[in-house]
Length: 402
Image 1 (cartoon, one colour):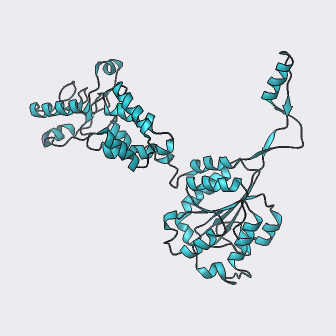
Image 2 (cartoon, one colour):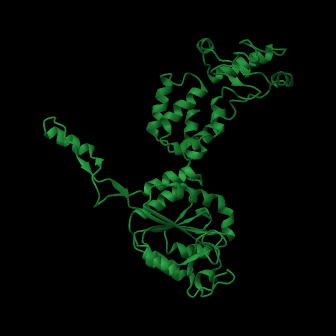
Image 3 (cartoon, one colour):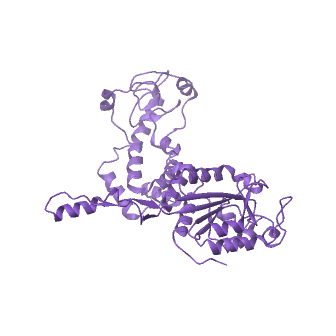
């Protein structure tokens, strides 16, 4: 049984090693699971899951493998009627916790069969029959540390119910998530440098300890100039059109970037489909509210980290032709590819984040333009994992792919 659970975990993407699995088996032999499925859930999760990013996969595997344990079949309709009642929550006392021991699964099944054969009326309270509000191993709205919930809503959740709730879904890093996850990933972009000027106002604790020791215990404080974050960021975001589908996701990234206080400077511009001779100051791409791209290239130094967000999906002519821009009243004197190549040449620390899942890049309607832009910029998915890979590229200088 447990060997099959090992392979179920592997199938759900939980990286479990044989050494870790052997540790679980040894812990079971030592009785550390308390002879209960709930105990086994917490024990195996503690020993097998190495990062919170895998909690959700573990829960899905556990709920799938043990899905038949929590809801026994074959209960008479009359017993379901008895159990289908709302009761006030039961107050669990320390005496109740001490009194009831946990039962293993085989013992619970045997006891349940006996109760079904014997019971002929509804029961509330007590510690034996299938009922409500008591301390029997079977029923609901009561308490038993190793029982099976039958009917009602769970108050003291079983292991399978806990796993099925997927409370750790937001910890996953292989899916598009929320503002906090993006903030945590962006924090890795920080790079501190010592200031060359200014007063030494920050205590250097290590140097103070060294100096004090060298002075035979006589305290000597050592001060240094405070460090400041030297990272400067340009955020360029595609807005409108096919990007409307990803508005919420892009808003989360935008919020995370703007909430971050890890950057020395942050500038945000917008474009539609492709970058041309201009970049706009608002997501509506208002025609009278823009800055020339040429000015941006002249003004912002090459050490800016450039994060471009867009699905890279457009008509090939928008990317390759003079006058390919589709906005009414605008005309680009140079193809979009020209401006993308110039941006990449000027800002070597630059990446492209695509909200379209990578598995679809070769199949979507914009596959050709995605491929062409991916030849210029390192392109990653707009997920937390993708952002972290992009940050690695932003921390190291690489030759432009032009």
